[in-house]
Image (cartoon, rainbow, N blue to C red; front, side, top):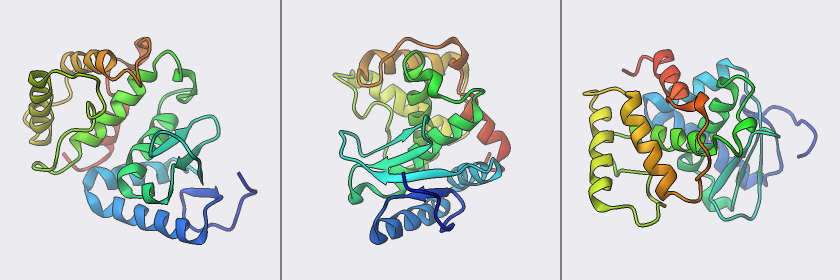
Length: 207
């Protein structure tokens, strides 16, 4: 990344984006805040923790990524600079500042825990009738009956009929580890509950 630059946004420490790419990123930040209550809560929580991130571009297989070692969010190409991709990577940045010692320690053991929590966050914060769901969208041969069951679980959470109970969360975490092979890893015992999600909920007035 380049040397620190004059502040263009409170969450941007530095960037290697073009003028147009930076404009897209600023639009994505604005869209994220306007998207919903929990999205704004995530944004505000990062500001409150004085999080500063680097941004750049990199050819890769996924649309975007967060590197906890360098506190950098990267995008595959400028088409991927949008609020949808920004949202998940900012949640990883929230996990990084929330969990003691950051999430670099979980890049191997615990990777699946970190990734699943981010997917669940994206799923539960959508509007009730929004398309569902992100968590198993890339899963290999995920059974249809389980897919419908997961969707119903998410809809119930969106309706605030149930909370993120550990027993249900762990059930779907195990399925995610089994079917989403891209993110599979050994579990980490410190991450058996969606602590970062629940803390965001508690910090907000969304529920």
